[in-house]
Image 1 (cartoon, rainbow, N blue to C red):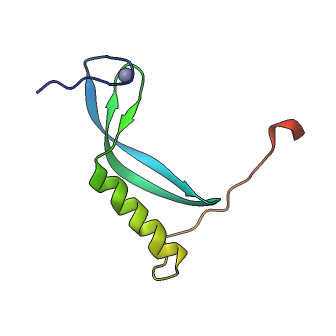
Image 2: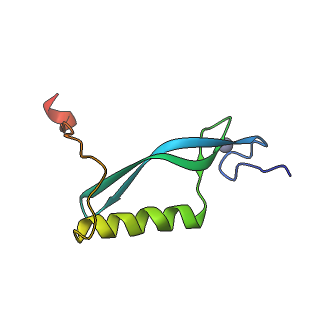
Length: 83
Ligand SMILES: [Zn+2]
C-alpha cells in the first residue's frame, strides 16, 4: 500500500514519532512521541484525525484544570526585532 505526499507528490511516506505543538488562543500544549506519517522528501507530516482529536481533548482538559500535565516547561520567548 503506497502512499503519496499530498504536499510535494513524493511517493515515500514513513511512520514517525514526533513532538507536536498544539496552540490555541495563545495557549500551548506540547505532546511528545505523537505517531504520524512523514514524507521522506519534504518532511510534511500527516496525522490521523483520532490522534489530533485526542491532543485537542487533552488541551481542553488541561486548560479547564480537569487534568494536570505530566510536566511543564519554562520556555524562553523573543521578538525577532529585539535580537
Ligand atoms: Zn512531501
